[in-house]
Length: 164
Image (cartoon, rainbow, N blue to C red; front, side, top):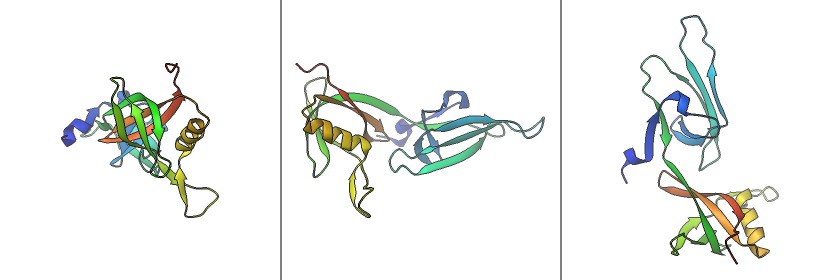
């Protein structure tokens, strides 16, 4: 997949809070997206953006000058899909998912995050822990998978109402 297929250029009005955008070269989900007032009557139009990196969680912030030589804002191409959860490997974090066509998808894993009560230890992030707990309780689950820049992340979980 070519790099051009993973990134689009959009105009500032297409970027909103909660959308995905590159901030200082990092793919982020925006928490802050606001047009700043002009410093003078003839001042430049500016956009302040801030959000956590999709993959690492580190927060990035930038202010873009939208007038002189502005050519658009880079945004990653994203897709979201929901899959039925068939099985879960707690050691590796990989999931066995059922696609809409009935195929098995086994290349998506839960995201790891730092354990609060054990310094230096790692466990799954909040969504991963919720999936593990609900799966152990016997709930039928659908996981929401976000595809960004050729990588897939589990970003949500919901009850699978289609299971009989």
